[in-house]
Image 1 (cartoon, rainbow, N blue to C red):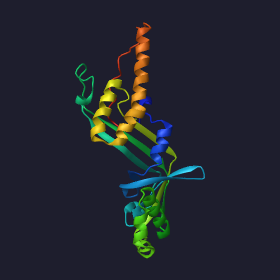
Image 2: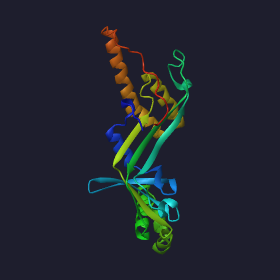
Image 3: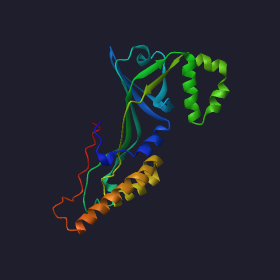
Image 4: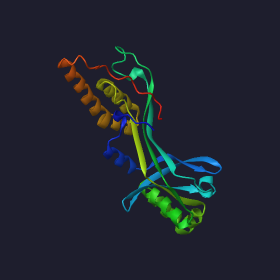
Length: 234
């Protein structure tokens, strides 16, 4: 995945996102071909390494068939359609619709643990992270042990991480403010927070730099705003 500098996610933000539970696609290669499953993931840190952890149904081909090479997890954290009507500058500079998103690609070896105890541990850890540990307590250990026989624990060791946030950072600051105003009324809040805390400061800094260069008479610079980057995630 190509990531332009202005679409890179600040490291502290990556850490925050990975510290939360997010649904994503686990993609693995097998002799029979490629397989993918959408499941929730949480991160564990052990011995200086980071792992994205989940569980799969035991009869899932990704659980049963040997995995060839490394796996890929795509965490699509949040995404939204962006109408040009929501840009403050659209009357003066008409634009086209686009799609903003935050995504993280993680690659590394995948390990499947078929032991029911391991699967139950993962399922309970995920439930606890969602603040719902009371729900498994109500089910009772005997029933949980039986249910755990139908799932397996799965984890991917993060060896390569590619975070990307195409979140209007290359727009005029007024456009980002108008997007914040729009999404404050319709959500999601995670989208609004990133626009306010990351995209807007970046755009303001970029705009101030362009203004300073123009005022200094640096006519040899091409100071026009860069065109919006293609929506491709490649």
